[in-house]
Length: 319
Image (cartoon, rainbow, N blue to C red; front, side):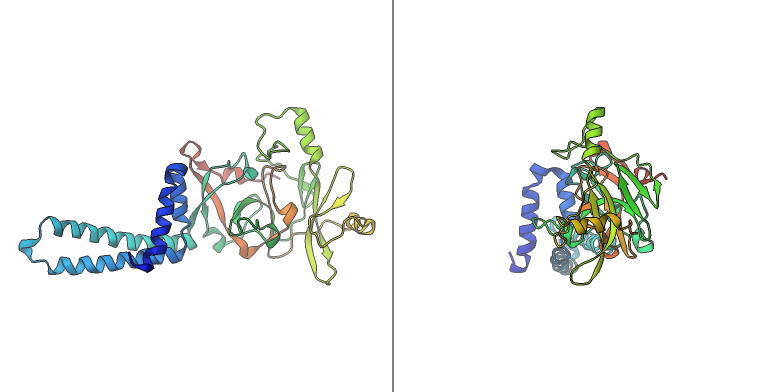
């Protein structure tokens, strides 16, 4: 095996070695996420194969064009098709059109469940901007990056667009001062973060009581720069936030936070929050997502087949 084919060989070996454990959906997802560098190696290898076969095909005398010749023509046609498919799918469709994504966590149940595979529309945000209610695939801001998997993409619901004032009070979402009906919102087990199928009234109330209120405020840091940050408050009205740079054990700071009005989402940023409101690590804790981090809009679930359906209907936010 040529040394320059080694990365492709290792990638494909590892991919199919795991297929029996993860299933065909896992394999398709891994292929869909294969880096461009490996796709180019794959296409280059096929090009050399095709050139070698083409040379054999055109130089084979007519009277010798039997079984081996026919097999070479078939392999040549397959190589040709795969080269064009790789170019179209990985250099045009995936960067600019659509891409598949796997749901690894319960932060969007019951809209999206762990193990679902979705198709995201990338083109739609090249022609326009996310709207409130869209289910969005994006790269998290630095504060939201998981050091164990820094390249992972997130998927949440967009609840705030530039200029909108978004608040949560007693588990109720308010946008620009108006209550928003959220038919997709769910309640999960507070310890595990997974959906409670039919929580009783006590469980519902406990979930509401344990959820902090939320707002965005404009804050000036010690180095002088200003930033719109998330601020949470518990049921006793005590304010706190997750940004370690701010000392929230300071009574003066807490007093200032109480006095600060809710700030709008700034230009070029979006607020992303999970449907599983008490089982989601989202913008309430790590802040806003810049426009350039947004990848695409979730359109439909394609696997498992039993859950194949559009998610656009669930993306409707009713004011």
